[in-house]
Amino acid sequence: RGCAGHTSSAGTKMYSYVGSSPAAQVKVSDSPAYGKLPPPAVEKKGVMVYRAGERVGFSELKYHVGWMEKHPSNGCVYAAGSGKLRAYKVAADGMLEEFSSADALGNPAHFCLSADGAWALCANYSASTLSVLPIAADGSVGAATDSKHHVVRLNPQLADRQEACHPHQVRLDPGSGAWALACDLGASRVWVYAFDVARGSLAGAANSERHLLLPEASGPRHLDFHPTKPWVYVLCELDGNIVGCRWDAEQGRLTPFGSYYTLPDGVSPCRAHHSGGSHVLVSADGRCLYATTRTDGAVVAFDIDTATGELAFKQRVPCGGVCPRSFVLDYASPGGPLLLVGNQDSQNVASFSVATDG
Image (cartoon, rainbow, N blue to C red; front, side):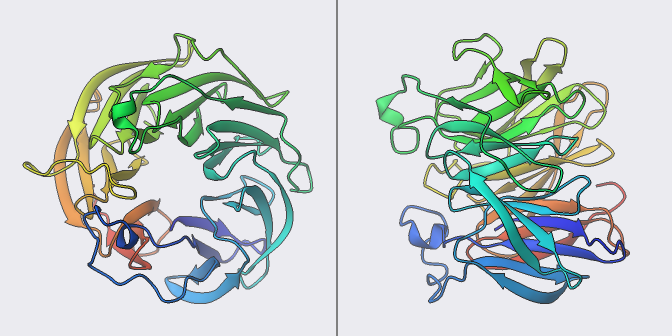
């Protein structure tokens, strides 16, 4: 379902972790991939562990594991699973051992860790909430220190996917860590809250002018920050667009400057579950943007104009499986940069070499 890299405490081995999830498009009759594969006879729950592209083992758990992150300093791995944020110690062979968990106040579709590693911010899709949980010096996860519950009036004609607020991702401004931005697929908004790193609290009213309202059927899912310029790119799951925004880190404001279609000409976006845009990342050098699109099962690349932030279509390649949910950019690979795609329904990770021009 997702990919996360982690260096063991020995500091000499790099492991990759792939979390599990239920089948997706193969169970949704109006999805583009319905009928391409039979639903799996057995759905294992846990985390697959790899090293240098080779399988090391499988940490079997009693729950599916969604988003995963490595801690910036304590050597632990964190994951969302069955309504909790969970902490794991990493054994010398890369296997995971859970040692702490806490209620995330919902079932997180995504979470992020603060730069100092003291806080985890969770986006809880079904519960319509954001939550903040502390991480102690020993790596354990504490009870939530703050939360936001979202309720807005929505268009009933869009109730197939947008019947309620559905926060799908939360990110902290990487420059200051003072702002939390949350993509809400149901409300077609990016919520922007001030984040108090000393108290672990989110500040801002539901009607704050800081929140970015996008077209009501757009369904923003994930965003990424440009590494050096004040630009944020918002991937909309339901209408197939990426919205480029200028980011004012002083005021906590997003201002759109362009919209860029991710699908091929003549291909309409799909609103079926598990079927639209899924993830977006900007390259480390800031010259390229990548996104996965489950409507056509592809990875799409754009060039970024380094003067304006505008996107220009570059390339589209098949995702190497069915239902590309998440991907990572691996710059530590000995053979050069890789883009690793976790394909949810075909249960595989596809590896793509990234050339010097992106």
